Image (cartoon, rainbow, N blue to C red; front, side, top):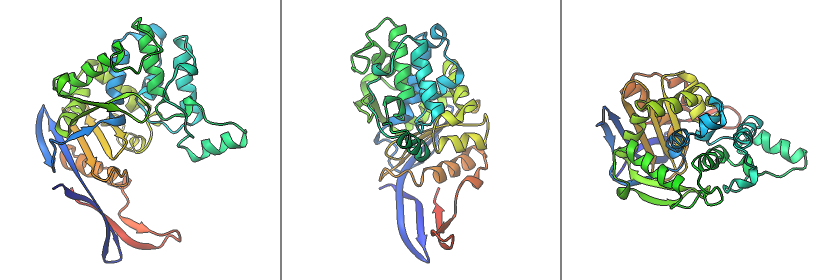
Length: 312
């Protein structure tokens, strides 16, 4: 049974607890683990940096002159702010494509202010406001650069998606046949792996030449990635790269040190992720980012009514 990684205390009573598992890899070897790290875990949006590697290897970045911040938004789960919409739009424009080519669907921006601006303007969200629009813009650009059909870019049998599977398998050090496949919230294929393999993939991201290019784009443009990744990378510029995924998944690496981290919160909550990742970075990478983590539980009047405890 997985252990408790995060607790919420109200007064002197344990009100909530989040169990989960984590794996830490250094130099390809597991150096830290908790819980069932062999259980299959879907990467969800943690796969985006590796999907961005495929975009680079397709030749799309050079062919269409994509800028580093545009590479970063391909990796992001962005908040639908103007800067994100412009970057995704720019990728499409440079590749001679249109927003109608995106098959991720539309949802309201994750940014409350961006949603309010749309409402005040009497406009509805488009696919460009989808938090995965950067990834999809990169995918259609890569499909076009490969000379493959754009209309079917999400088909698991499409050359682009086959290349994505090869990329993830290569970084994770597993056979393609060992990966589980499913459909993500944005309709793209997603990949299921043991947590140790996910940690190994992130460790490799900081060592592989193309992976380092992707990691550098993320590190230099953290505002394109989304939360809590932005906070982590701004707090330690150039020292780490992290990517959140839906259902309480997180992957991170410390480039140049061969360290990779993977976390899965059992109930799918994102509430414990930042605290757990910060604790792991402190324990295994000597990165002290405790200032990012709240330890007091406060109510709407600003009164301290309990505490938050990380157990890593």
